[in-house]
Image (cartoon, rainbow, N blue to C red; front, side):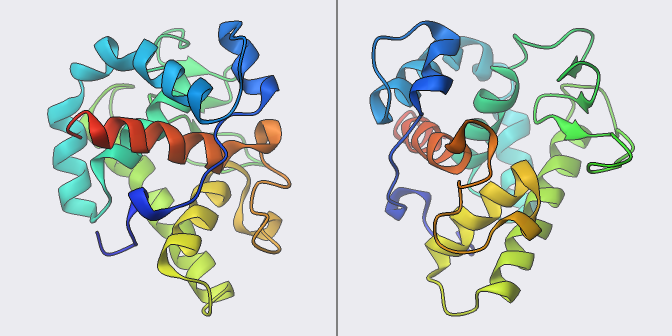
Length: 186
């Protein structure tokens, strides 16, 4: 896709901390793939919406699926569409806190409108990282944009993009999950 290939991004996968959400006996790419596979049945019901949004926004649908898996476990971790103790909305967990993203939720928690809003936020952060680090490869800019989606572009200082992300692994985990979804036809 225009932002680089999700399949060409090196990834270390999920940290031990993230893997413990599922009580896994491993971390890394194997843990990310296991969690993505756990979410696969729930994810299938969103596939056409994910494909539509990915196409219209120029983002690989597998990446959208990877974010959905990480953020809400394909909706499984949400309560009436809300997660993160009421601070985030929908499958992709759009931050609504005034001191965070400050976004107004659009559409139903599992709607195409929500996915488009969240993907537009991702595209915004990819652009910010491209501007901040113009000499990085497209894939590194994409990985930086994924990290910025989690904690803002002001927290991306160098190619160790996950230094300040949740679990210290956000982009690595999302990329590994996205690579797994890509192999499943997303």
